[in-house]
Image 1: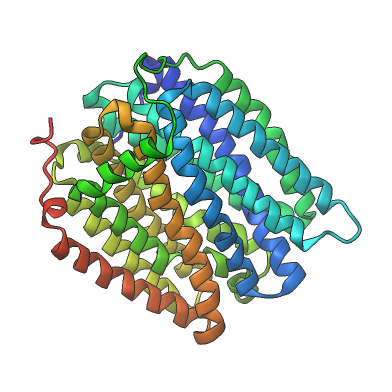
Image 2 (image 1 turned 180 degrees about the vertical axis):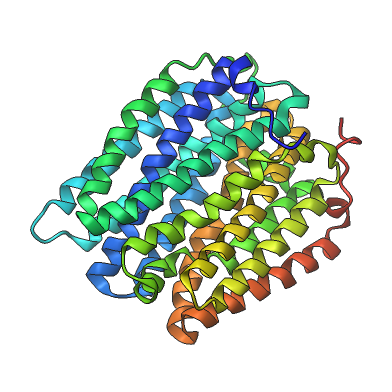
Length: 405
């Protein structure tokens, strides 16, 4: 079988609602993310200022992802998801109001980015911890592929449309569409029938958070999946440079295409991932996919034409999509349910800190070495780091999902 088992959406009602709600939310969020980057670059003309958006989001994500994970192990995950989503909708509304002012405030954009990141940090742990409860163990890779495919479809359509609409109108239109998208996502999440937390669930506390961190660090296969992804995203994340690159490729309307291209590749790789069920060495698949991401990003840094740049970004996204399938499966196969929320918080830090800090690194590197030098050098470091981590973490490299059954 080549295609992922999309019939799961027909058979699993709550998985269908969860995936739909997140995909719609992701679609709207992409409008806001592109609009934030474009608006900051328009107001400052600085790639570093755009990169600092990611740096400003780092602290709330690190702190609140751990808190959100502990809450997800103790309370109703659906209510946590709904509350976080409602908070994010209020942030988008504030951005819309600011954008409509005669002179929008730059500080509002950074404050909004911080609060939006905090809401995301509280949203994703219960969301990710809930998904494995909605399917059987042998359906996990297919569920991860579907979840990722539809999220990436939103990641493609959102930025592509955002770039065109922002160029034709202004950023307020993008913020407004995000506000509207929250109506659909909040409705879907409200209809979820979620399993209750276990009666003996541990109350959220510093001790419970530290227990989750200790568990994550003690499992080399988990630690490897985190570090390989952080390395790939920190050195190979070029999104903060897209507004500046777009000036070379044709203008603001190109920003959305650059942003969407990795999602196109990820969607194709995830939707044709039926073969993944026959691959049992998840660690090796993660390392090879991360290295492939690095190669594609390095070549993207050298691309002189828009079509080649988009193709290489799509190839990078395809590699990242494959990595995501095997990382998700490894996590869901090895983590006990009573710790899923806390470990989902650790996972969120691993897959979000790399892009956030990576965008800041990219912006600073571009100021020092130029746009292409920053991207090419980062891609090379991704490959070097992936190989080094594979050698340093043999249990991760040799992990076999059959032995974990």
